[in-house]
Length: 435
Ligand code: IMP
Ligand code: MG
Image (cartoon, rainbow, N blue to C red; front, side, top):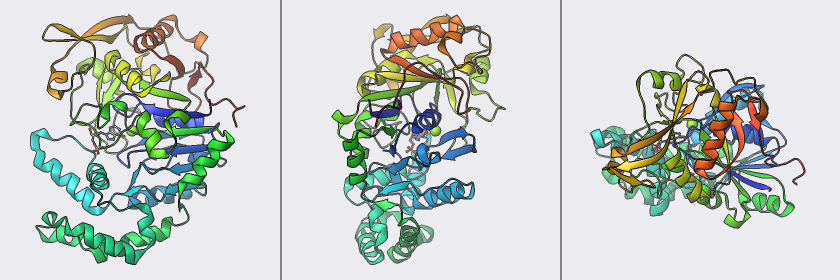
């Protein structure tokens, strides 16, 4: 079990940063494989609280090699800021490598993302406004700029001249015209290339050598399975494949080389941005789930938006388990439910009175779903100090067991607070013996 993919199995923000931070100590290589700085991973460890957007969460362990894989889209302005902040706080970034094949989020992508959202009006997706969709669209349209291109200013200028000629329609006023000048952009982005040069490399040999040695490898997901471009709640999705297939593609690790897939689920559900959310709640229950006033309130790490909250949806969870080959799961933030007397879990769907076994293709239909709830008893005692499964209240063990049965995966980890050690481990992932 030496290659473990850790994927978000809901709508992102499941607490992957915490889980990866714990597992990274046992890995020799951590590869972030998709998304961009639309992601925000909060990591709390003995060095403090960090909010990572592009850098893999294995960065805190100096013996771990961290790779930003080819499947990621990178805004170099944001990455440089992130590296500066890590270094200022004493975290070495020497072990960070950036795939030269990863695509670059350019300033015109950010402009286009924000303008598209404004024009969509009520039909807006609620993107993070970071240029992610347009960057992936350019990648697929074969008009993208790759990280390796930043290392050659003249070549970058030529490439931008070709690419930007196709984007004239964006420059209909003076401010955007300036954002589309190839010479200016090439100079600025080549400077980022100089700053990042020591990290930019072909990640293929790094990854293949680690595989050959049987070294423990962690594939770090961003976003979540329900935001998947193909299988998510389209068009209310992100523009990449955040699941296991994307992990293979975005890291250059063959699907058959992935030994186990750890799906990360929150003990309830949250979503930022627009789109259907069958188990969404408001009122008193929402206030409990949101934990406003705590440092780990349900507020977006990247955008500061209040997250929508709801009950655990086992129909969507099972869908994510099957599509991604999730065999083990982490249940995070169990402690958030500590005060509740009753905890509803969505075990089925009805649409226009008829049972539905999996999410329909149309976002409009998913929005009309009536969830069927099973109400589980709460435990109404703190779990934050518990470190062994046997010490969890019986009702909490029953909640965990019921979720495992409903989704068809084995529980491996439970988090009971944001601190590094607030974890209960049920199955040894990446045992120290590997590699
Ligand atoms: P985009 O990825 O910025 O294009 O945004 C598309 C949708 O995905 C929006 O609903 C975002 O809120 C959501 N999204 C993107 N990245 C994340 C994430 O890391 N966590 C949670 N939601 C995300
Ligand atoms: Mg997040």
